[in-house]
Length: 630
Image: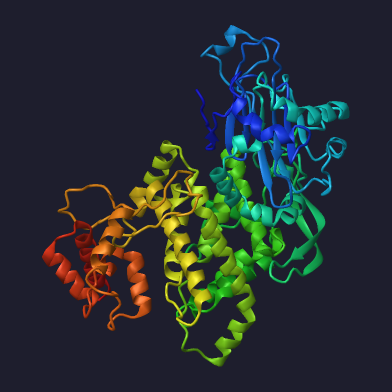
């Protein structure tokens, strides 16, 4: 009955009459107060879909003809660290109890609209009494459904009077305790704890840059109505604006005037976000190819004056000829990224990642395809910036190289933080892609027609080459950072192989032991403690066609069997760093190492005994990997 067509999860928490007694005890103490924001939609049609922070619920039709069509949520968290997205779709519902409403031939033409809530809305921190909460009603989201437009109207088009707002804020806590009311919910009834953790990760960088990103860059205010839109070239105009640049590391601010082309959107009710053009420039292609193949690149280049455009491409050409002699030239590798950070995001990498999260959420929950274009262009630009990046190994270099490195170290640290944050957010975004037809299409399209997989392949190769698995024995903090990097990379690998197996199974060299989130907030919202995905891609004689799942109990049993015969598996022939990598990639093989054995001897013994199928697989894969690198 409940279906979510926008990628979020549909919730069945709407309560039926007479089934609310279980929640009464928890709310008795809060009958007179609101511990957070109140969200209320007046005259919302029965059968309509209401969404909050990625979870959708349907307002069920009651048998009571006198019941009002209304939905309310109380105790919504409100401070500077929370970003909320409310979505509403009438779904062709109605406030009249008409049996003809269930006609299967009726086409739903209603548009999903959204409302953004962020910051504290000016709410007083000492507002503990009911009177204070009622008087300061401006931070609550109270809107009315307009049957003529079949949308929830903005406050500017159809405002709710102050008396109605005060009455709602005062009555909603009591209404939530009334068994006859089935349309007032507590925030925790819609958003479970695990789901809340996932939402916090999906909005992490929106929250950390909310004032700069949402208010300054996107021009939004809390409570604004967002409607899907598309880019129209005729809407562009050039204006002179003052920009305030913020450095995430030093918090220093600078103000300068710039001429920019901006967009104005002709929307009667609501705001349609428009995005600046993002250059997606592959240094292997010519300027003419970029100008004709990608609309965003064409728009971006058209905004540059001829001399500036020539200078940028000449610097790229000269850097390409010097790549073989100077691998530390990070400034030219990131030239387009630096330009975008400066021009669009006030030199804030958190604002860029926040915009990446915001645009994806608006596409996912509102069906805004201009937001999808912006998301994929940003992601492609970030992947192309590191296309030729490799892990740098110290030990040689001239004094001039050291000088250049010191002068760009600040920029390099910013890039490191940016790509670390990107690695953190990508698994959550990719995990929310649940449409099987969409995933199958993406995984099967080859060539230039695939907008996503080439980007993900470039990013995977970059992270595989740059995540540091070596450890300094004297630096425990360094080990913790590297452990976190490995966990993030493991999640990224797992999501890629599960969502796009046809593409990424061939890119995984040997079996990959993928450790999924072991905390209370798995990436994909399922209750997984530990999954180990081990695929033997080169064993043609194996009868198993799919991946082999090894339970955590089997791993522990293998460790127990090995540890019973010796005190410690560490041998003088293996360094601590190598053993750590071995335990990560081949845990059963590492546990099976006997005293006075090296890894190769253990592999030979495992293949000879053939007592543990999983151990034999790991040994064979390890030997094959060794042969490939010889």
